[in-house]
Image (cartoon, rainbow, N blue to C red; front, side, top):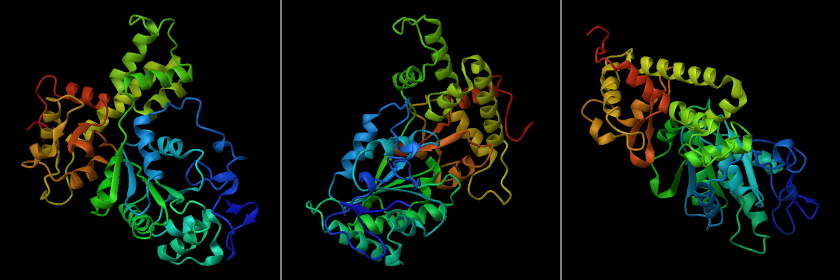
Amino acid sequence: MVEVRCHGREYRHGRECDDHLRLRHGRVCRRAGCQEDSQEHDCCQGVSATFVDRPQITDKIASYVESEAGTNYMVVIGPRASGKSTASQSAVAGKEGIIGVTIDEPGTVFTKIAEALDVSGFEAKSEQRLAEVIKIAVGRQSDPAWRPTVVAEIDRQATDAVVNSAAKALKRLSTDEGAVHAVLVLSDAKAAFALPTDIDRQLFLWLDDFSDDEAHEFFNKAGFLMPKDAADVDDPNMVRRREIFERIGTRVGTLKAVVKAGEAKIDHTIAAHEQNAADDVGGLLSYEPLAPDVNKTDGKAFERLVRDLLKTTDDVGVHRAATESYLAPPSFASKIFKQQGMHAVLYHKPTHSYRFYSPAHRRAAQRRFADGSWAWPFGG
């Protein structure tokens, strides 16, 4: 259990810190949910050797953490495996009073924070009571504006109810009580639709895929497909890298999978991603709802969306307003996208538009409609 200490004095089981709130060695583990000593546990020894700094992301998180508490809470959002957790952990690395928790059940935010702080003796039964506990310690600080920061990651298997419950709890602790800064890291793009409607108190931060330059940096740090001359566009390894980016994309998780498989299996890895993409596109286009389609979420509607997406570029997509006549609202459509075998499209919240989930999904759709013969339903 992580202890709260101040100059060697434990802050737990009802005993208040005499000076200010500190976690052992100044912080808990940077990996949310880890309950190990931050200097002794392997995952706390620093960021990965392949970590690519994205200051346009980490600076915004750091700026929020250093801002005045009580205004809003931050929501970090983006496609699955886009680097949300790593960016959040990097932004707060080395700062004092970082509380990392992973949320997988409704109503567990304040209990998990209490466990991380090891203040279970206070029997915090509500966010308000936990806020009072934190304020006791914060009140001993020389800087009255300082607040600890809760980085709460939503488990990828968590339900919408878990997301909603966690957001409400963090809002009360941060915005209403002013006891903490709160960073809520969502598991995927669709999870945003489970949040309470409270945009004035939510500060959204979306993570897109790596840029090409960031992807090259990742491969460089991994020692993967190292070119003899990076400035030479015809260098065989630079050509090979561009092929990977163009065919399956630059998402962090995708590139990690490529590196893990190894240079000898690049073709196999690309083929596997492209087959999965083809299955996703086919699954989405063939989808038939069990109930009468009152929400415009059948394969015919998705076929029209995919055809419209093929007329645009991946950085533009199709705005939700252009789909209102034939497709359900994004909150409904995204529930279908999230189902197994249907991850062909995602909703890009910053631009309010639909986009292909990856370049491999665009290519799969292009092949599907290449001869113009495919239509929904099959043969129709």
